[in-house]
Image (cartoon, rainbow, N blue to C red):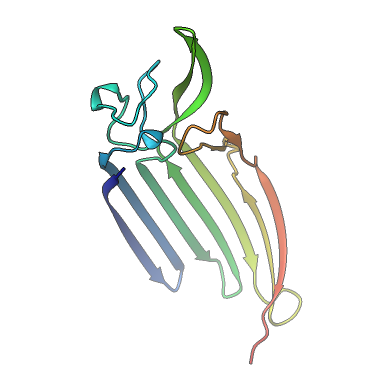
Length: 178
């Protein structure tokens, strides 16, 4: 079969002595899909290889894939050796299988719409920490402690897999200058 999508991505960057800021947006829409395992069926429908658009819950998207994503990354220089580095990532809603139900004496996989998520990360970095070339970074990932789900882009016969919760990190790195 065939799967075709159309979309676009746009990115903007600002740079200066203060640091930098990058932001991007991406969007896609399905314009052709003849592969039933990637399609999003309506409740109670088991798709065959010759499925029709009337059997689909959303004909413009593919299983497990958000149609919208926005990301923003920045680094703000507090001084020449200290920076604050935030990032925000918005992932749009997506569809995936999350349960089985018995319908007409047949096990039918059920599609669920999973809501959008906003992820925030924050790192602070001190360059030339204690000695020249040594950097120290403290950070947190998933600062808002959003629920991360890895949704299969096909019917894998199980619910989405959970991802990591909020985490903290510390990193020392040394850059050899030559």
